[in-house]
Length: 171
Image (cartoon, rainbow, N blue to C red; front, side, top):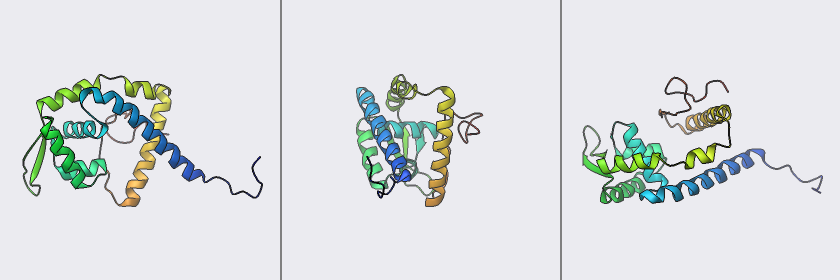
């Protein structure tokens, strides 16, 4: 029986902890699945970012979207280039380097889409619950990005009604 004088649990910390543990568990399950293709979550995310940006992006853009330091993304890109997943080219404008998705990278990305891991993970929720969950996460994410002074960028979510923007509509 809890002590009456004991302070209540920090509800906001517990929400963060639940999100962090859930993210880590999902990441572990996805890593296990993607290892069949020589991918980890970050490599797959980079391939997705490249595809979502017309097959190319700068290392700075990739680092920004992954919330990673440029030097760590540069190292990942070098290893992905060695594996034939991406190629680096002379950039245009302010960027000295542009990264492009190779045919091999596109093929691996396409194969990794055929997995059932994400469906298995999120199928515990109904379609409506997934829409609401996406909307809640979008709202929290937007608030945090605003507080950090990080500009919003658009990602095409399949949960989105009518294209880009807030997933799931009214929450």
